[in-house]
Image 1 (cartoon, rainbow, N blue to C red):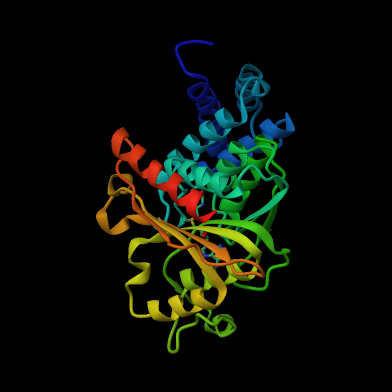
Image 2: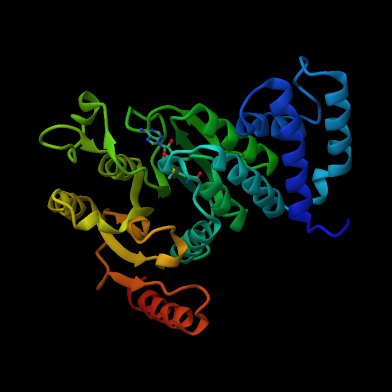
Amino acid sequence: MNEFSPIEHLFRTFDETASILQQELSCTYLDALAETSENLFQQTILQDEISEVAKKRIQKQYDEAHLSRYSKEEIRQAYQLAILKGMQENVQPNHQMTPDSIGLFISYLLERFMKGEKGWSILDPALGTGNLLLTVLNRQPDAFASAAGVEIDDLLLKLAWCGANLIEQPVQLFNQDTLEPLFIDPVDAVVCDLPVGWYPNDIRAADYELRAQEGHSYAHYLFIEQSIKHTKPGGYLFFLIPNGLFEDGEADKLQQFFQKNVYIQGLIQLPESMFKAKQAAKSILILQKQGEGLAAPKEVFLANMPSMKNKQAVQSIMNKMNEWFKENK
Ligand code: SAM
């Protein structure tokens, strides 16, 4: 093509056309990105109100893009780079996209637990931009029979919808508060980068066992409860959680809830180098919903992931994980 990699090349198409649309429509970059993505998918310029000059400039970029030449992963990554650029404008920490390094690791874990099975259903109840779910779907294109995502923020949901269209992944999308009743059948697997903080709706929280006795409840606790409720017996859940989840004042209640409803499979602390600050560091919690004929693993898989650059230490954790699978699965 030229000196750019395919991902950079496609990123430039998203970026340049989004910038033109941003100016023409006087909207945010992320809104414009969703618009240009929808155009690329529909293979037409949907914004009648923009000037003829802008239309010509955008069409030239689309003609040169040849979307069909790109793999689904290249499209996802280029789109993700454009979203990251847009998020630099202003985005709340709780809205941040799940980074690729974490998405790929969760995909790997899911693959191990699926053991080559196919036809699974999967749900992301905090879909955001869809990056985590789409990473998982791209990694195992034939493994999932259905996928669903729930997101309260209109713009993020629109970005997820456009992303899923561009990589031709059928995902059922719900634009609503996940903690309201969900019209989604129980799934085989949940992946979720939990939103962390207080849930402002005390009336709705009252329906949850993990509500606070007084004041606002933890949204992340309620998300865990809601996710377990929407998982089939024997299904697996992969949560990205704050490191201190089991250390705060209400953690006992969470532990008791786990004892009644799930088998904790593993807790993997991610390297601090993956996060901007030590306090922002996270772990992956793996649960299996209890069900007939199932039992807790002999031991919970506990690990502190080293930096991915330390190949020897990473290999040693992988060996430990292989042993754990031999013993427990
Ligand atoms: N995995 C996502 C991605 O790759 O973009 C990022 C998830 S982000 C950490 C958490 C998401 O939860 C945010 O997009 C936020 O808008 C959403 N969220 C927070 N509270 C919610 C609620 N009550 N119902 C639905 N979505 C909610």
